[in-house]
Amino acid sequence: MSKIIGYFESTVNFRKKTFQFSDEAIGKVIPFKFKNMNYQIHFPKFESNHSSIRENFEVTRANTKIGLNWIEGNKRNNSSDYGYAHAFRDNRVIRFSASSLIIRSSKPIDSSQALKSKENLSTWRDLISSWIEVLHFHDLEVKNLFVEQDRLIEAYIISTGKKKIVTRIKKRNEVSSTIHVSSSSHIELKVFRRALRKAEEGIFPPSYYTMMISGLKHLNKKMYRQAIFDVSTAAEMALTELLDRKLSSINPINKKSILSDTQQLNNLVRALRTTGEIISQDLQGKIGTPRNKAIHEGMEISEQQAREAISTARTFIESKLSIK
Image 1 (spheres, rainbow, N blue to C red):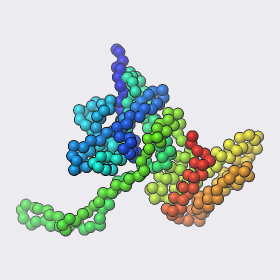
Image 2: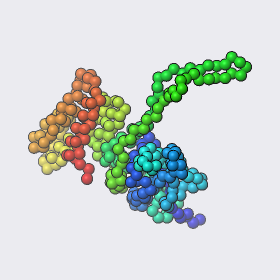
Image 3: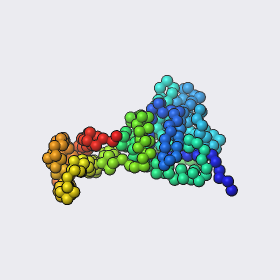
Image 4: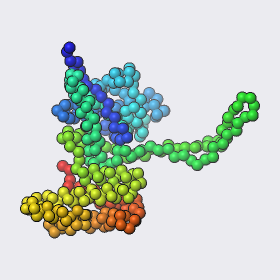
C-alpha cells in the first residue's frame, strides 16, 4: 500500500495562552523550522460585509494556500475560532488576539512524516509560548476581557393567573453588566520570528528567565508574596550563573567551596563584588530585604513591592545575562 503524499495542515491550540498581534501580522505567512521539518504559520485575514456592524468580522483564508475544509467543513471560520478581533479603526482590524495558530508544511510530505509532525508540534507549542513570554516579557495567560457586574437587585413580578407570566422589574436603560476589553502590548513580528528561531534549537529559555515570568504570572493573579519568592529565586539563579562564569578559571575544588557558601542572595552578591562585578544595591533592597521580611517576620508584600522586585530582577538579568 503506497503512502499518502500531501500538505500537512494543523491548528495548534495554546489552551489558556493568548497571543496579541497588530495589523502587521494580518494575512502574513511566516516560515519556521523545527526538528528538520519546514513549516509555515498562516495568520488570519479579516473581512466584513457589514460596514456598520463591527462584530461581524470573520477570519477568511483569501490569498492563503491553507485549506481547513477537512476540519471545519466547507465553511468560513468565525473569528472566535482562530482569532478574536477587538480593536478597530476606519472599519478595519488593527489588532487581534489568537489562541490557536494555523500551521502547514512548506512542501508535501507522506503520512508517516505527518504523524511525526503532529507529535513534534506538541513539543514546539510549549517551546514557542515560553520563548515569546520571555522575549516579549509578557504573561500570555493574562485575560484581556472581563465582565463587570453592577450590584443591582434583580426583581420580578409573577402573575397570579392560570398562565404564569414572569416580568422583570427594572428601570429603563438599566444595565446589569459591562464587558471590558483591555488591550495589552502586541507581539511584534520581529520578536515572534526571534522566538521561532530560539524554539528551533529545541531548548527552553534559561531558568532564571522563566522564573521571572512565573513571578509576573503570580503578580497578575494578585499573589504578591509568591511573586516576590519567584523573583528572588530568579535573581539567585542568575547570580549563581554569573558567579560560576567568573570562577570558571579557578581550581574546581576551590570553586565548589566558594559556591557552597553562597546559596543566599546577599552572599552571592557579596561574592560577586569581590570579583569586581558591579551589582546594584536594588537587588538586595528591593528583592532580598522584602523577601526575608516576608519569610521571617510574616510581612505582607504589596503590589508595588512585587512590581519593583520584578522590574529590578529584569533589569539586572537582561543586562548581565542577555539572551543573544
